[in-house]
Length: 97
Image (tube, rainbow, N blue to C red; front, side, top):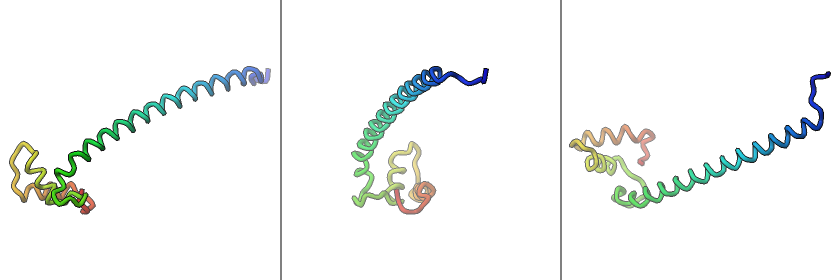
């Protein structure tokens, strides 16, 4: 015995493997499709609200605009200096949000 499978055994194994790959591929495609749908929903919800935050309508939240948002939505009161400090920490690349 050479320890090798017969060609018929290899062919059956290849078919089973391909079926398993096809099933897995289909499941992954379904999951990606669902994620894409969820992302689209989130993007549309954010887009619907973004214009409320972007006071000057330029498509970018400035640190000042973000500071105003923080002062409005946080449960504790912030001074404008505290809000600006938090906004500055959030804007790591300093190009707005």
